Length: 449
Image (cartoon, rainbow, N blue to C red):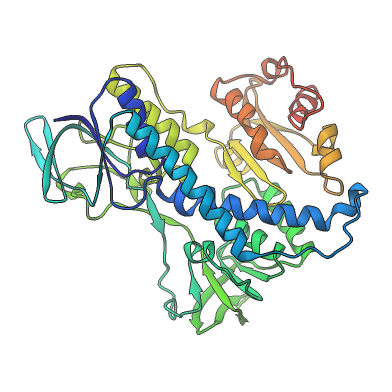
């Protein structure tokens, strides 16, 4: 018998397993694929490896701005980039497995199905064995959403997984969807010399992100030659051609590859969840601040909740689950989850946006500065001003922080702490930010509140 059974070995699953085992609970973890889930195997980690190679290539191209002469035109070896990506992924997979093994967690490789509940015990079947479990954590993640577009089965259509192992640079890439996955792949392939076009249904890229920031990024990308077709409805795909409607006019684009990246949907089917009366939320599982579902002793965390499809949110949710099981008072703060987009320039946000506050009729004020007010940003990012925007409530509380500029993803954690602790601008301004760092931009904005 196990204290906790976890279905899904991604960031939420393996983190909860480690924390629960550290609390002295007996844990069993079911995973039918690779430990690490989408994040480690086909998401966060591999994509950032590719983007780092693109960043290095861009730095060499821009070396003249820093007084460095690159005497030869830089080129790239896509096979070596992919080899490096695979090496890092395998190394990190081994690290996670080693940690789980050291915590004496039983790992079962296979598809787990909840067969029912007898008394206080859940019965979970996997590989022809039945396991009795006191508490369940559903951490089955999410998968890419494939829209019902005629011709979507064309051999030219790819998902982000296909692009992760592509060893030949396409001449032209069409991306359907202007979300963070599409934007990051646009950055990567454009840096390698691919002509990139993005078709987006809405009037803004990175929907849900601060519009000023997403608009700034779009302008930067357009300067570099990336094409955008906004408020455009794809009607069909014919071989390597995408047909769409924009401004009531039929248009088409042709490319070597067509990336479909229009979102992700929680994995709920095939695990036996239909046996229970579990409430839903955004097509995922509804949870409270302790990550409990509407069914006693069933928890959910990670992408399957449909709330925040981010690995760092899943880590924290997993901590909350383990602490709750141990009787430690803890709860999730969904308002302080940072959002990070690893474009070039980067975007990082946390808290509420202007649009959300206006829709809720919440009083607020905006204080913002170019990122160049931080000396180190000016040193390292000559030619792009960036922006740091603080949104402050009428009681001086920090409600939102939105940044565009490289290193944004590294410094957003400080803003998340300020929001998580409900700090006022005056309180946060007392923090001593080291000099010279990009994080000093917070001090520069705060002293102007």
